[in-house]
Image (cartoon, rainbow, N blue to C red; front, side, top):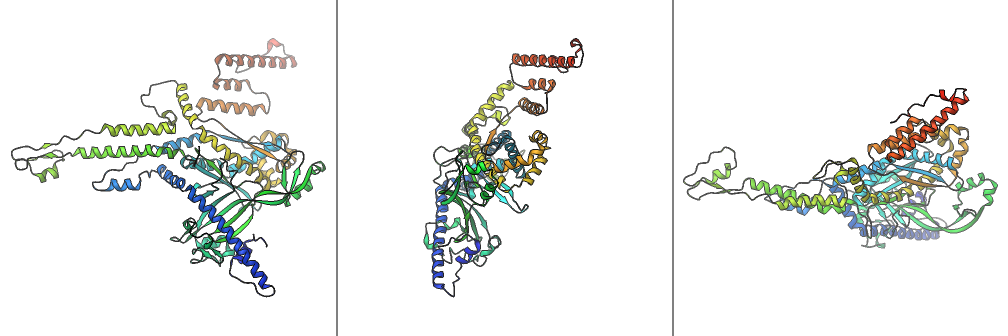
Length: 638
């Protein structure tokens, strides 16, 4: 039976049209079988997504609540209803969770991530450096820094975050690489996967809500089948909902109230027989397709001889798009790598679901809010505590009720003056409960006062090193949140390398490299100036070789002194590419390095001796007596 992948073929198949003419019986029977297979395939997709929803529903509800906590919506509906019942009580929200998220986001910004491409088969250091520069170009073009920050906020809040890679042909016929943060509540994962980087997932899906008109615009081939009343009926043509019965929560796929439907891109793995080219020297394999055929023609004879061709069953990546009971496409992944384009990032996971730090701070935050609200309610009621008034010989009850709390009011009474009831003192239990809740938030989040840049209770002036030590202690406790991100960044990096090699032409690469060689933050200047004439060859190797993606992340919480030392070290490294480093630059760098004084003095003395020797050699070569040499500048005792 034929495999239908073209949208036009699928639209025709899923309509109720019948074949006519010669062999119409066989054709209609084959089409009927194909429709049944499609229905079973769609049913499997919907069952997978529904199973993920049911398994992760507690996490999804908690994640939605975590977003609301950060956004200052922290009162449970039942508690809010109780507090609003007469006599109404104040409901205050003192958001101690938001600063924690903002501090973690700030630490993420300080942990500057550096990435580098390393050569493997068919590459060298120069071509790897070109590919590293192209990775930087793609990252800058997509504001990748801010995409990762938003993703990390998702992880810190909910425990899950996602980055999606894609190719857009809107502005460039060859394609532009897209890097986007995705909302974790729109992603559905294989619930049986266990690896943190998601490499063991068998499928992943992303859903987007659209209206009828939007759906027709996206998929014009299915315009006749996208009709209100049909596509919202759970039964379109032969795509019968009877296949799954009541096992599926239809609200995942349909919203009858707004007449919207969810379009799902369902990425899945499938074992298929393919022709492989195996490099017998390295063991690497490549699928024999149109791209490989062109590469093979360009290979030197020795590389061609190292290849062996064989047919094997391998795992391929495919993508199917469904809209309720309509299948719009089912085809091979358009990307040259063997990853799902939706890469997961996780927060704190030990056995079951991953959680963000917010999940562990909700109860202390609720306790603080209720404590403050109850204390204020107590204070408000105590301000007008009431009066003890004789029923016949006192003051008028009406006057006391109306004017009893007005300052300066004169109240007439008959024989016995009314006496104000002494208010109950403010509960120290409430005050202690509020402080306990705030302390619990700090101890659980490990975001102490020093990290927040505020003085701790009982603060006494201490040295900068002591404060920095406390800051570093708080950072160490949250390092696991940042280390988990590196796993996902590694997978995204490997995808980007393959996608760059797929769509970037040599002329486009040469233009990008030339532009970035002049940028002050680029590392391409030295390579481009020295080997400009060889760049076409280097670029060719960059687009055809095999490479690894290495990520490094600097420590957070750097002091101003450490930041200056880091800048000077970078300047020194740059200067060394062009010649001898000035003595004054070395001396300036030593000032900001946290080294023992004895070591600094020893380095200074060695630098001075080497500089004097070099100057004496220059003087002798110029015919000037050694005792006539002028001491170099900047070598005084600093």
